[in-house]
Length: 273
Image (cartoon, rainbow, N blue to C red):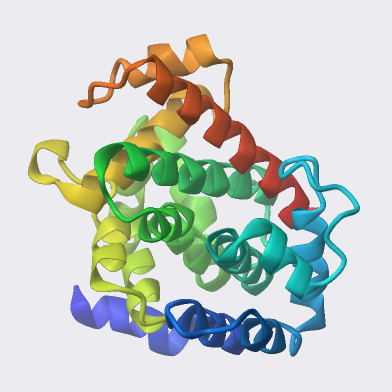
Protein backbone atom coordinates (compact mmCIF):
# COMPACT_ATOMS: atom_id res chain seq x y z
CA UNK A 1 0.00 0.00 0.00
CA UNK A 2 2.76 2.45 0.86
CA UNK A 3 4.36 2.14 -2.59
CA UNK A 4 1.01 2.70 -4.28
CA UNK A 5 0.31 5.83 -2.24
CA UNK A 6 3.83 7.09 -2.85
CA UNK A 7 3.23 6.71 -6.58
CA UNK A 8 0.23 9.03 -6.24
CA UNK A 9 2.48 11.69 -4.77
CA UNK A 10 5.32 11.19 -7.23
CA UNK A 11 3.77 10.29 -10.59
CA UNK A 12 0.30 11.85 -10.41
CA UNK A 13 1.30 14.81 -8.30
CA UNK A 14 0.18 16.22 -4.99
CA UNK A 15 -0.04 20.00 -5.01
CA UNK A 16 2.55 21.79 -2.94
CA UNK A 17 1.24 23.69 0.04
CA UNK A 18 0.87 27.34 -1.00
CA UNK A 19 3.89 29.18 0.38
CA UNK A 20 1.80 31.89 1.99
CA UNK A 21 -0.26 29.31 3.89
CA UNK A 22 2.82 27.73 5.41
CA UNK A 23 4.18 31.14 6.41
CA UNK A 24 0.90 32.33 7.91
CA UNK A 25 0.38 29.13 9.92
CA UNK A 26 3.91 29.49 11.36
CA UNK A 27 3.24 33.13 12.24
CA UNK A 28 -0.15 32.42 13.81
CA UNK A 29 1.33 29.68 15.97
CA UNK A 30 4.01 32.09 17.24
CA UNK A 31 2.75 33.74 20.43
CA UNK A 32 4.94 36.74 19.64
CA UNK A 33 3.60 37.24 16.13
CA UNK A 34 2.16 40.65 15.36
CA UNK A 35 -0.74 41.59 13.15
CA UNK A 36 1.71 43.49 10.97
CA UNK A 37 3.87 40.44 10.35
CA UNK A 38 0.86 38.31 9.47
CA UNK A 39 -0.55 41.02 7.19
CA UNK A 40 2.83 41.23 5.42
CA UNK A 41 2.78 37.49 4.73
CA UNK A 42 -0.75 37.62 3.36
CA UNK A 43 0.02 40.71 1.31
CA UNK A 44 2.27 38.68 -0.99
CA UNK A 45 -0.79 36.93 -2.42
CA UNK A 46 -3.24 39.57 -3.61
CA UNK A 47 -5.72 36.96 -4.81
CA UNK A 48 -5.83 35.51 -1.32
CA UNK A 49 -6.21 38.97 0.21
CA UNK A 50 -9.18 39.72 -2.04
CA UNK A 51 -10.84 36.41 -1.18
CA UNK A 52 -10.17 36.86 2.54
CA UNK A 53 -11.72 40.35 2.54
CA UNK A 54 -14.69 39.12 0.55
CA UNK A 55 -15.39 36.44 3.12
CA UNK A 56 -14.71 38.73 6.09
CA UNK A 57 -17.19 41.30 4.75
CA UNK A 58 -19.89 38.74 4.06
CA UNK A 59 -23.14 38.50 6.04
CA UNK A 60 -21.75 35.30 7.55
CA UNK A 61 -19.64 37.44 9.92
CA UNK A 62 -22.00 40.42 10.11
CA UNK A 63 -19.23 42.87 9.18
CA UNK A 64 -20.31 44.05 5.74
CA UNK A 65 -18.22 47.02 4.61
CA UNK A 66 -16.21 47.22 7.83
CA UNK A 67 -13.16 45.17 6.79
CA UNK A 68 -11.02 47.12 4.29
CA UNK A 69 -7.58 45.56 4.80
CA UNK A 70 -5.86 42.47 6.14
CA UNK A 71 -5.02 44.44 9.30
CA UNK A 72 -8.72 45.23 9.69
CA UNK A 73 -9.57 41.54 9.25
CA UNK A 74 -7.07 40.57 11.93
CA UNK A 75 -8.38 43.27 14.30
CA UNK A 76 -12.08 42.63 13.75
CA UNK A 77 -12.12 38.85 13.24
CA UNK A 78 -9.24 37.87 15.51
CA UNK A 79 -6.28 35.65 14.71
CA UNK A 80 -8.22 32.39 15.07
CA UNK A 81 -10.81 33.30 12.47
CA UNK A 82 -8.19 34.74 10.13
CA UNK A 83 -6.20 31.51 10.39
CA UNK A 84 -9.27 29.44 9.53
CA UNK A 85 -10.23 31.69 6.62
CA UNK A 86 -6.68 31.60 5.23
CA UNK A 87 -6.63 27.80 5.33
CA UNK A 88 -10.02 27.55 3.66
CA UNK A 89 -9.26 30.15 0.98
CA UNK A 90 -5.81 28.83 0.06
CA UNK A 91 -6.93 25.21 -0.11
CA UNK A 92 -9.89 26.21 -2.30
CA UNK A 93 -7.47 28.09 -4.58
CA UNK A 94 -5.08 25.12 -4.76
CA UNK A 95 -7.88 22.81 -5.95
CA UNK A 96 -9.85 24.85 -8.46
CA UNK A 97 -9.95 22.15 -11.15
CA UNK A 98 -11.30 21.97 -13.77
CA UNK A 99 -12.71 18.56 -12.92
CA UNK A 100 -14.86 16.40 -15.14
CA UNK A 101 -18.50 15.65 -14.36
CA UNK A 102 -20.12 14.33 -12.21
CA UNK A 103 -17.97 16.25 -9.71
CA UNK A 104 -19.73 19.31 -8.28
CA UNK A 105 -17.23 21.74 -6.67
CA UNK A 106 -19.94 23.75 -4.91
CA UNK A 107 -21.33 20.63 -3.29
CA UNK A 108 -17.81 19.47 -2.34
CA UNK A 109 -16.83 22.74 -0.66
CA UNK A 110 -20.20 23.11 1.01
CA UNK A 111 -19.65 19.73 2.64
CA UNK A 112 -15.98 20.38 3.49
CA UNK A 113 -16.67 23.77 5.10
CA UNK A 114 -19.77 22.50 6.90
CA UNK A 115 -17.67 19.64 8.31
CA UNK A 116 -14.93 22.07 9.32
CA UNK A 117 -17.28 24.35 11.23
CA UNK A 118 -19.15 21.40 12.74
CA UNK A 119 -15.84 19.87 13.85
CA UNK A 120 -14.83 23.16 15.43
CA UNK A 121 -18.14 23.38 17.30
CA UNK A 122 -17.79 19.78 18.50
CA UNK A 123 -14.21 20.49 19.60
CA UNK A 124 -15.44 23.27 21.90
CA UNK A 125 -18.02 20.87 23.31
CA UNK A 126 -15.65 17.91 23.71
CA UNK A 127 -12.49 19.69 24.85
CA UNK A 128 -10.45 19.12 21.68
CA UNK A 129 -8.30 21.83 20.08
CA UNK A 130 -10.72 23.85 17.86
CA UNK A 131 -8.27 25.03 15.18
CA UNK A 132 -6.93 21.55 14.56
CA UNK A 133 -10.48 20.22 14.42
CA UNK A 134 -11.37 22.87 11.85
CA UNK A 135 -8.36 22.00 9.68
CA UNK A 136 -9.02 18.26 9.88
CA UNK A 137 -12.68 18.79 9.05
CA UNK A 138 -11.81 20.98 6.10
CA UNK A 139 -9.25 18.52 4.71
CA UNK A 140 -11.03 15.26 5.49
CA UNK A 141 -12.15 14.63 1.88
CA UNK A 142 -9.31 16.25 -0.06
CA UNK A 143 -8.14 12.86 -1.21
CA UNK A 144 -11.15 12.93 -3.53
CA UNK A 145 -9.69 15.97 -5.29
CA UNK A 146 -6.31 14.28 -5.68
CA UNK A 147 -8.01 11.28 -7.29
CA UNK A 148 -10.12 13.50 -9.57
CA UNK A 149 -7.04 15.42 -10.69
CA UNK A 150 -4.77 12.40 -11.16
CA UNK A 151 -7.17 9.57 -12.03
CA UNK A 152 -10.13 11.09 -13.93
CA UNK A 153 -10.96 7.94 -15.91
CA UNK A 154 -10.71 5.78 -12.80
CA UNK A 155 -13.02 8.17 -10.95
CA UNK A 156 -15.67 7.82 -13.64
CA UNK A 157 -15.30 4.03 -13.43
CA UNK A 158 -15.58 4.19 -9.62
CA UNK A 159 -18.87 6.10 -9.85
CA UNK A 160 -20.22 3.59 -12.37
CA UNK A 161 -19.12 0.60 -10.27
CA UNK A 162 -20.65 2.09 -7.12
CA UNK A 163 -23.99 2.60 -8.90
CA UNK A 164 -23.91 -0.88 -10.41
CA UNK A 165 -22.95 -2.74 -7.26
CA UNK A 166 -24.72 -0.53 -4.71
CA UNK A 167 -21.54 -0.37 -2.64
CA UNK A 168 -19.84 2.47 -0.77
CA UNK A 169 -17.45 4.86 -2.47
CA UNK A 170 -14.59 3.40 -0.43
CA UNK A 171 -15.37 -0.13 -1.62
CA UNK A 172 -15.51 1.08 -5.21
CA UNK A 173 -12.23 2.99 -4.85
CA UNK A 174 -10.44 0.02 -3.36
CA UNK A 175 -11.83 -2.28 -6.06
CA UNK A 176 -10.59 0.01 -8.83
CA UNK A 177 -7.40 1.51 -7.37
CA UNK A 178 -6.42 -0.60 -4.38
CA UNK A 179 -6.61 2.39 -2.03
CA UNK A 180 -9.15 5.01 -0.96
CA UNK A 181 -9.57 8.76 -0.98
CA UNK A 182 -9.12 8.76 2.81
CA UNK A 183 -5.67 7.19 2.48
CA UNK A 184 -4.71 9.59 -0.29
CA UNK A 185 -5.96 12.50 1.84
CA UNK A 186 -3.71 11.38 4.69
CA UNK A 187 -0.82 11.30 2.22
CA UNK A 188 -1.66 14.88 1.24
CA UNK A 189 -1.69 15.99 4.88
CA UNK A 190 1.71 14.35 5.39
CA UNK A 191 3.01 15.98 2.20
CA UNK A 192 1.85 19.36 3.50
CA UNK A 193 3.42 18.61 6.91
CA UNK A 194 0.26 19.05 8.93
CA UNK A 195 0.17 17.69 12.46
CA UNK A 196 0.13 13.90 12.76
CA UNK A 197 -3.27 13.99 14.51
CA UNK A 198 -4.77 15.78 11.47
CA UNK A 199 -3.25 13.20 9.12
CA UNK A 200 -4.76 10.42 11.24
CA UNK A 201 -8.20 12.06 11.35
CA UNK A 202 -8.23 12.36 7.55
CA UNK A 203 -7.00 8.85 6.94
CA UNK A 204 -9.38 7.18 9.38
CA UNK A 205 -12.56 9.26 9.09
CA UNK A 206 -14.36 6.26 7.55
CA UNK A 207 -12.90 3.76 10.03
CA UNK A 208 -14.89 1.68 12.52
CA UNK A 209 -16.17 4.22 15.06
CA UNK A 210 -15.61 1.97 18.08
CA UNK A 211 -11.86 2.02 17.36
CA UNK A 212 -11.62 5.82 17.17
CA UNK A 213 -11.13 8.49 19.82
CA UNK A 214 -10.17 12.12 20.21
CA UNK A 215 -9.87 14.28 17.09
CA UNK A 216 -10.37 11.37 14.70
CA UNK A 217 -13.71 10.38 16.25
CA UNK A 218 -14.76 14.03 16.35
CA UNK A 219 -14.08 14.51 12.62
CA UNK A 220 -16.01 11.35 11.79
CA UNK A 221 -18.95 12.62 13.84
CA UNK A 222 -18.84 15.99 12.05
CA UNK A 223 -18.74 14.24 8.67
CA UNK A 224 -21.68 11.99 9.56
CA UNK A 225 -23.68 14.93 10.89
CA UNK A 226 -23.09 16.88 7.67
CA UNK A 227 -24.14 13.96 5.49
CA UNK A 228 -27.25 13.39 7.60
CA UNK A 229 -28.32 17.04 7.37
CA UNK A 230 -27.08 17.61 3.82
CA UNK A 231 -24.52 20.05 5.21
CA UNK A 232 -26.94 22.36 6.94
CA UNK A 233 -30.48 22.12 8.24
CA UNK A 234 -33.04 23.55 10.62
CA UNK A 235 -32.22 23.02 14.33
CA UNK A 236 -34.84 20.26 14.71
CA UNK A 237 -33.30 18.35 11.81
CA UNK A 238 -29.84 18.75 13.31
CA UNK A 239 -31.26 17.37 16.57
CA UNK A 240 -32.62 14.28 14.79
CA UNK A 241 -29.30 13.73 13.02
CA UNK A 242 -27.25 14.26 16.19
CA UNK A 243 -29.31 11.60 17.96
CA UNK A 244 -27.54 9.05 15.76
CA UNK A 245 -24.10 10.13 16.96
CA UNK A 246 -22.39 8.34 19.87
CA UNK A 247 -22.30 11.62 21.83
CA UNK A 248 -24.73 13.20 24.26
CA UNK A 249 -25.50 16.75 23.13
CA UNK A 250 -27.82 19.12 24.95
CA UNK A 251 -30.03 21.82 23.43
CA UNK A 252 -27.33 24.49 23.60
CA UNK A 253 -24.86 22.20 21.84
CA UNK A 254 -27.38 21.44 19.09
CA UNK A 255 -28.07 25.14 18.57
CA UNK A 256 -24.36 25.84 18.18
CA UNK A 257 -23.99 22.95 15.75
CA UNK A 258 -26.86 24.24 13.62
CA UNK A 259 -25.26 27.71 13.58
CA UNK A 260 -21.89 26.18 12.65
CA UNK A 261 -23.37 24.22 9.73
CA UNK A 262 -25.05 27.35 8.41
CA UNK A 263 -21.84 29.34 8.74
CA UNK A 264 -19.83 26.70 6.89
CA UNK A 265 -22.32 26.63 4.03
CA UNK A 266 -22.20 30.43 3.78
CA UNK A 267 -18.40 30.58 3.62
CA UNK A 268 -18.33 27.77 1.05
CA UNK A 269 -20.52 29.74 -1.33
CA UNK A 270 -18.07 32.66 -1.14
CA UNK A 271 -14.99 30.49 -1.70
CA UNK A 272 -16.29 28.65 -4.75
CA UNK A 273 -17.91 31.50 -6.66
